Length: 506
Figure 1 (cartoon, rainbow, N blue to C red):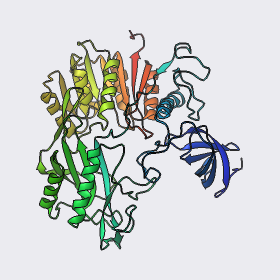
Figure 2 (cartoon, one colour; figure 1 turned 30 degrees about the vertical axis):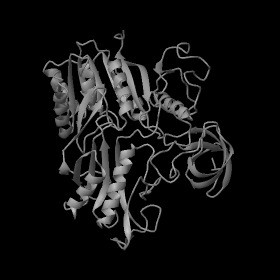
Figure 3 (cartoon, rainbow, N blue to C red; figure 1 turned 90 degrees about the vertical axis):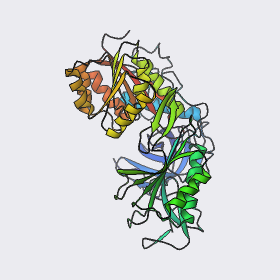
Figure 4 (cartoon, rainbow, N blue to C red; figure 1 turned 180 degrees about the horizontal axis):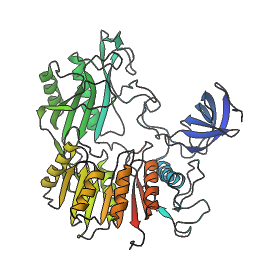
């Protein structure tokens, strides 16, 4: 089939869905075009930018018909910044789309029958709680129940952690990090800038405020940039490998009100570090910890292996649903505390605990889900590959007086079979893997151990669907899935799924 469009063509197309990256999906004579900023239900005029064999990319020029779900994005740099993808979409519509995104993956990748939602494969947003034929979930026949996405009453200023790349720009420039270096050397009069990368690039869009960050994260980043510029600190330059400051990481406790500032540096020595620390302390009264992390590798990974405290404590503290956590510079701790509580409460509900059960928490991190589970379980065992996280988990258990949770560092697929040999037989296994999903060896281990229930917490609908298919083929049945909006105005969606061994439900 010949491709009906060419680069630079101006085309008119109807938008029939959104991709997992939030791009509008249009078709011209059957050929698919991805168009950033377009919404389902719109007819748009677009310019073709790139053409491949089966699809292409186009730039939105004009909206001929506008979706009722379109809103004006409140962020001034939204169109340039790559941090959010859906600010131009009404929040209720975002929640509907995220649910449908989960459904699409369960059906397409997991080959699962979904109750109460049906996809045409294009990601079309359908009426909430009803299938394409108009039947409600209970009327549409057996299948996986996918609930409405749990959203936020106030979906702004929700992040408790900022990770901001730092660059250089001329003082006269308003925009990103272009112009701050000449032949790898900071130009005279240049200053530090920091913000998210522009879409599809490593060009930093400087910002003083991010509407999804807690206000104090913004304040701390502004202060670090200002003091660093005054002291003549240079930013890391990816091309030359020179410069000092790579990232500023800020963590705050929503309950404790404590702040941690982390300076990620391309070198061990920070010039005039005492003045920098004094300046941060004077400008941020709630700061409890100022930390340096050293990363001298040519890599996109933010943190290096060496961390040292410049002033204050090694950790800050915060609470989730009454459970206290010590959080270090590199600890994994969910960035949206309000929605984390909603997610973990649902995970505990799905675990069906009565106070007697043995529970294994694979990928336990610093013990967040484990400690939620321990309040209602007989015994909880947590395993995590990162030794520092296990030490944090042990410390958090002691911090909360929880003595029915134990933790071990290692590969889940190695540690859990050994536990079984030692007589530890779980009634429930909880998994909360990274975006790549569960290791196949862990899925095999679950199928061999055959707990009554599996609770799968996921940050990636596609790998969730893939892994559910494996567990279904091994004898489990997926009962229900609850999407949770942990990251409003972005394309990301968390989910928690309940699986039962066939015949054990109820």
